Picture (cartoon, rainbow, N blue to C red):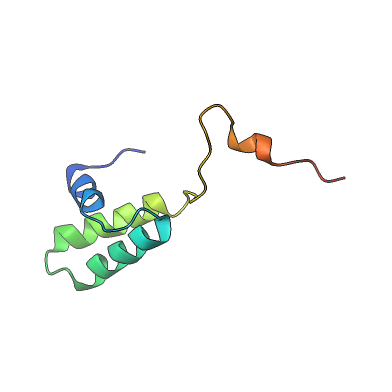
Length: 71
């Protein structure tokens, strides 16, 4: 995922570590920011963060190994 400078600044300044909290803060920035560049950056960052999961996967265990085939 590539982030531009404004997106990096916004992400660094958020007050949450969970995806939901960050998305909520970006939504508020998107709605109430007076600067159109900041609004655009918040919208772009939300689109990039939505597909991510809150679950933590250790680097030695890929996420696919947690799922089992159902037959």
